Image (tube, rainbow, N blue to C red; front, side):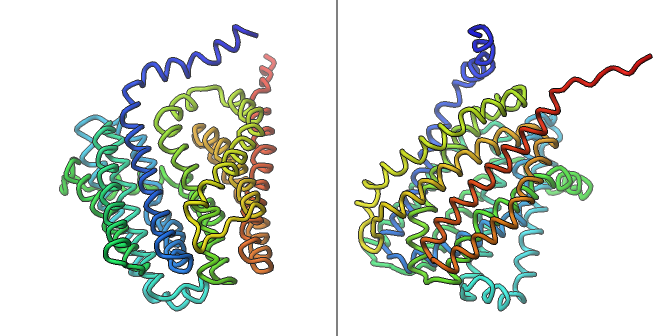
Length: 428
């Protein structure tokens, strides 16, 4: 047993020893994401629940729309750029950049005539819809150019750039609140859009963009490559983003703001841990591990991981809400619901990480699980939010994660258990 355990740890130990260079960029990137999260809290604390509710609604809409604008090209380029010959990289970067600009602008233009329908469905005003489209395009360009830099192994550069932009954004936000006394959501949404665009523009100056290398055939190939990931991103974007839209429809903007502090901010911190920690250092290890064995390990640690995440969040929330105060009252019952949901969300991300590193097979399992879980999850969100408002949104988020974890655990267990069964050789 000891030898088996040692062998199981060897790939991870070798990975960590070989990636010590990543410590600095990972730390800077994590600080940048933490600074961005702190900026969101400053806006929430300084503007009040109602204004922050509109800000959060626009963010949620933008995140969903950006899935269609990006079409997972950031994921594809993270794989293609490292293994492409240096001479082929300008065509990859240029084609992906121009294709995304065209698709993003086209979707924004196509949405213009649908603004009345979008406002009726989401409960947002027309200005919020337009801000969401602009923010989605800025976020798309930011994610795409960051993936270019990571794919070209410019880790230190992109981390330093993110930290500088995040620090400047925080400084502008604090100055605007404390000195200028600005309490308008539109101002802070505009500042966020400018921050994303600025980061993308600076990144482009460091990229091998060659307009003549644009290739429609290459664009089609890149979009085909990202099709599975796009479906997964679309399903998760709706499942974990539309709750804010439902709450905005059946409650008021202040409830949306409070919900974003209880649930949205912890989700963002969890994303920082997975993207900046696991994403840079551990995903390569997951990609090389035996997948049935990996999923058995995930199943064993899932209860502990979810429980520890929930307990830590619940304990830290008391200090956190002391800093917020104002229009964000602390409720142990609501925080317990939030902690339960975030604990389940952490477990879902563990399965997501393990399956996403298994190529097409893992992607198909994820898509099947999300497609099966989406109808009851969305129905539960509608029912809970319509009946109980803010409390219902927290309940539905917890139930959504518990449902998805159950579906993924059972399905993945069966699929990968069958994959381990040896196929008998045909008789001669």
